[in-house]
Amino acid sequence: MPREKENAMQELVLKGQVRTQIGKEAAKKLRRQRLIPAVVYGGASEPTAVTVNPLDMMKLLATGAGENALITLALDGDGERSRTVILKALQRDPVRGGPLHADFLEVSMTRKIKVQIPVKLVGEAIGVKLKGGLLEQHLREVTVECLPAAIPGHIQVDISHLDLGHGIHVRELTVEGDVRVVEDPARPVVTVLVQRVAAEEGAAAATEEKPAEPEVVGKKEAKETKEGK
Image 1 (cartoon, helix red, strand yellow):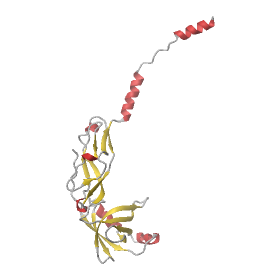
Image 2 (cartoon, helix red, strand yellow):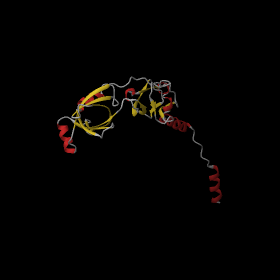
Image 3 (tube, helix red, strand yellow):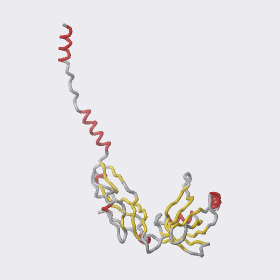
């Protein structure tokens, strides 16, 4: 049975500043200062425009907590108020890949939220290792519902028992604690397929080995002889 086991996410601190200037020119000015614009959604207040250091933000996300990390956003210009947020969207430069804009969602530690969690496959399927099958991963993320402090880093799925034609579906995923997977239970997560190329090559070889049928010429010759009379 596939099994998930992951500690709750770490809580990390990111400094930011409330900003009053918005628009493309203001954003360009911020990036020249090696800062990026961001917006905080959720909570009791209206969306808040803020500024954060992209290097500090990416360091937090690279600690192993992932993009669902709980971040304590300490904002200057907001009465020194700290907000607990998670990263909801990150816009990157299409050429260089660096962050250009971030959207954060303010969360309540006592209210459940829905987030997408990566699916991590472990082991080597016997259908692939011993029988030349092809592993196909249908879902690389699944949506779960839980309290912010219980967000798992990933869902780990053991595929070592999978044979040819076998698979694992969402209904077979197990998570620890008060975490609920909210995907369609019938959706496949991963399957082991018979490689079509090998099957097609085998069929082609069988066709080539089949002896060609002899051409029947007797009746044709007889007809030509009769017409020639």
